[in-house]
Image (cartoon, rainbow, N blue to C red; front, top):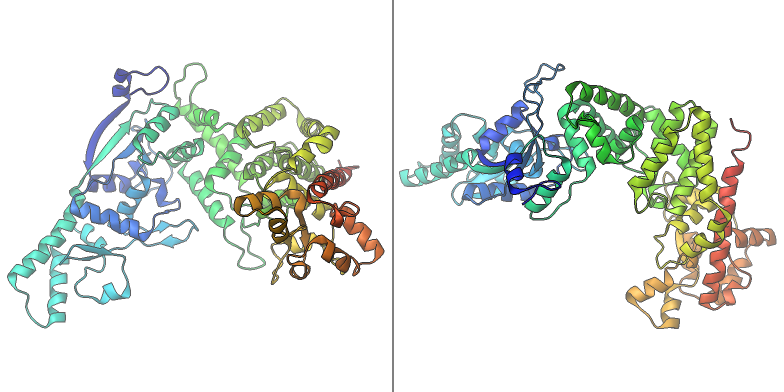
Length: 607
């Protein structure tokens, strides 16, 4: 086994140690803050049955897997803020086994956890001594004298005798007679056995503070039976749990706020219809805003306070870097900034997360917006440039593939520029290069030749319809696509992507089904936007049957407008399928080009 580049077995032995601790010791160390357990604040994703099975394994003496810790190198440091029992910086952070240790800690101490929707949740277990059965508590177990209704009480006293006596007395009252000594001893022994799981030895791997995060990830993957990967955001959040717990908590609260609609008109949260940002996503924006870095790996080194020259960590440098991170995070989590930025995304034609294929692009664009605001770029100009940037990043896939590399490159270009003019110039030059005539004439048309409606070019076309204030296809009232895409408008049936050549027709005509049918029918150029009433009337009829009927409901002016916006070739309803797709791709690319041009034209005169 090797750790890091060029590592040997001898190196490995100096960088980790294999040991074991009684379960009670680990719970106690978490309680006093010597072991950082982030998942007490982070969403706990285990089901109650998994917690039950964990304690069943402990009770029966089955192995539950080892836990991996990473030394922080902070034994001599203490926090200067707070007077509670956890006023010391943790000596260890947990890398593997968070859910297991969280479950044990929560049950044994009665501490609530937070679920994936950021709601507080109790972890309670009931225990039936006569057969060693664990159950998630219900009204039935609470009222059943055969159960210890909540095992937490067993671990909160120095002796299990009180719980044993209370259980036996309750059982005797229910049975209206005294228990035989043999049965009473057997039940008491079962309860004592449950209490003794506190001494269950947990296998622990402790990684030395000097090991780098790449090696930690390698060890984790090799040890973890599921092969789960750790990403850089995991490491940054782990570091924040140690060195900036208040900042980590602020990230968690903001993430929770993203899922919580305002309770009233005066209330304000981070809730929006584009993204429910998690702490791992928000920390990426914070790192970009603080240090101008798009790669989280390089930010990790900064937050460990490492010197670029010696590679040694400096306490003073670390504190300075975390102060810089805290200042940036304040801007990132500012609700005014957040919602102003999201208005720019809406102005680009993207009304909800359903239209956003790349959340990375959205967060990267937010970092650029923050940089523009920090430099004092005029608000209207900044909003317009960011609208165009997000539109460009979605339709070109700028942040797909090597997303961190491209993001880092963009940030470095900005770092080399000066003032608001520099910020504006960098973005304008990149937009001109990406949104070129060649892109619209060739690459975009090619991107529309896909086999799925989950397609960035199709989403950009949809956004363009919003920018153009396009009516729904065949709508005689002129109701717009934008109005039906608005997630805040509640309707019985909303906007629907409709197959211009119905899927049933494709099945009959080409004799295909299953995946082959989807790949043929769900071409981006076969999608349009109609109201559900028109869609239900069209059903599986071919265009030669339904087009003239619905076109007759429109005025000549409406028909011309809808034909262009919905990119319908002349005589399309009588074309063969392949010819129709090829002709419509060209027209869709023109609508997208004109949609972007309309955004660009709005920038004229803005300063």
